[in-house]
Length: 139
Image (cartoon, rainbow, N blue to C red; front, side):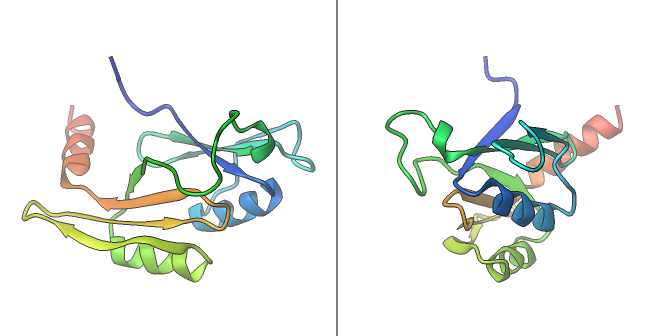
């Protein structure tokens, strides 16, 4: 039933600031902005090996009853070096949500932060992700 991530949506009151922060973090500009780049209410980045979409939406469009700040889910993005990624986002103003944790003996490492806009950003070194990626490249 669930076939893969399509779009991860984050909320921000100040889309211009969020665009700037995520552009610096990701090293790319959003490929999509609505209604326009001067007055964005929705921006979207395509990132990573599979071009997953990270959308950032004006908080005024949040579903009724949505609470500000961290919620009940953490989406982890694969990174090659969790410690370095964690230090980078913290230096950019993110607050540590969960410290760097080595998860068992299989090589999984996680950490998470709350970005300056109240969204949880998960960071993970995931050997399974790399195995799947390598299998698709060798197919």
